[in-house]
Structure formats: structure tokens, C-alpha cells
Length: 325
Image 1: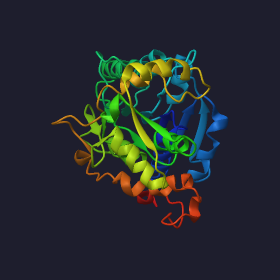
Image 2: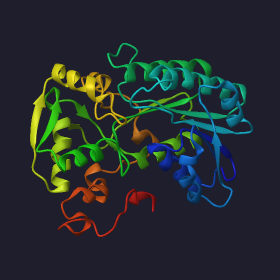
Image 3: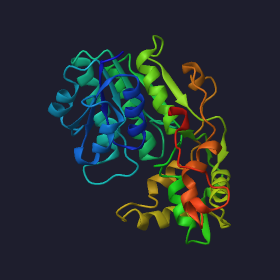
Image 4: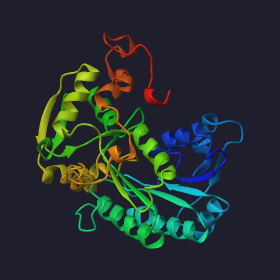
């Protein structure tokens, strides 16, 4: 695979940084197609000089998508959003862009396409996020039948939007909300393990046309994850159950913040568990043993302790994704 060119759409995001690093260490040449190249320059030192190229690409524009795929052998679509803003709607990014990338990859003669979806993707879902993820899968499959689809559960890591957000909130709020009573179940997985799954999906003979549901080694409730986070940052907070109806009302106002703490669609999404279905292909089918998140989160949540890295029990050094070292 050395010197093979792979185009990674959305490579500057949370999962993107680990995917680009994993592919770079395998010797691929990488073209990172992103909307804002100036926010992706931090990726360049992950490879050798000239190994990683940043290309400005709007994934809703056919000409720009075609240009990003020109001459490439492999493609990965990581594009996704957590909340809608203007032209960045769920339909445009999760459905429309997914279909466009798949069609363009087929037309360009790309050999392999890996598409990132999400656990819980369902065309009948109440959540727009989950519904459009499922619509995106259907469009990808129609345009590129041999595409490999990965459905990760909640992603964790130093840049995650889950533990970091609630740990930040716990620094000054005596109460943390348990939406829907905190009963929603998750199977969180480390971002670097999903990145490894992307790489193996590009390389292994049996992966084309398959769907893999990527959940971590344990299933946790929302309450379990909040208690784990509070133990790691050494703080005691009241975990207050909040009915879905009240959470939706609060989310209606919070969604207008520049970086929303909660949106109504996220409340709807929390009504459905994010766990691997029985009989699904998983990490095990890719011969990956996912890292236990309880060994991963101490390496970045220490900064939310009262004394940061000097707190008793804090890791000696910042070492996320130790398995990649």
C-alpha cells in the first residue's frame, strides 16, 4: 500500500485526525479534502514532507468533489455534523454529500470507499441525525455497492464532544442533567480504534460491501458515563434526571448558542440506545481489540481536576491513543 493515494473527506475533524495519522504511518499518500484548509494544517506534521496534501473542498459541489478524487485509488468519507447551521444541514451533509462522494468515487474508478455512518442510523428514526445517516448509507450503497460502511457508537478521545463538554460543565455547575433519566445505553469506543478500522477496511479482502458496527468493550448507561467522568475529575455533583419534554424545551433555547450545549434533535437522538446489534459484524471481524475507555479517559480528563496535572492520581504525562505510539 506504500505510496497509494487515498482521499479523506472531512479529515480535519475529531475522527479525521486519527484516521490521517493512522494512514500516514502505513505509508499512504493522503489528500485531505476539507472545507476550511487553514484549520487542517496541523495534520501536515503527521506524515513525511509532502505525504499529506490539504485541498479545499465543498462536499456539496460536484466539481470540487471530482477534483478531490482525481487520480486517487482509495477514498474515505468522514464528513458529518452534530447540529445544523445554514447550508450545513443534516440532509446536505449526511445524505446529499454522501451520495455525491460515492457517485464521484465510482465515476473516478476508485477501488475502495469507506463510509462512516453511526450506530442507530435508521430511516424511520425520530432524530434527523439518525435518519439522514441512514439515508446517506442508502445513497452510498446505490452508487458504490462495494463501499464498506462503518457505524461507530459514541466516540471518545481528547477532542471528544461528550466527556469534555460535561467535565467542563461540572467545573462550575453543582448539577448535571440526566436526560430521560440517564437510561440511554452507549457502547463508547476510542477514536483511534475506529481509525484503525478505517485502515483495515481499505486493506482487507473481505471488507468491501460489508457493514461493521463498532462499539467498545462495554455497554454503559448515560448515568454510568457521568459517574465515570466525575470519578476521573474528582468532583461530586448532583445527577438530576430531566424528562425528555423538559430537556426539549431547554434545548430549544440552547440550540441558538454559537456552539450549542444541546439541541432538540440531540434530545430525540438520546431516546434510542447506541449499542451493537446482535449478529452484526464488529471490531472482532477486523481483528481489532478496542481499548477500554476507562483506560483512555484519564489521559485527557485530568485537566478538569481542581489541580490539573498536579492532582493526586493524574497521569504522569499526556498520552492519548497510547496504542498508536
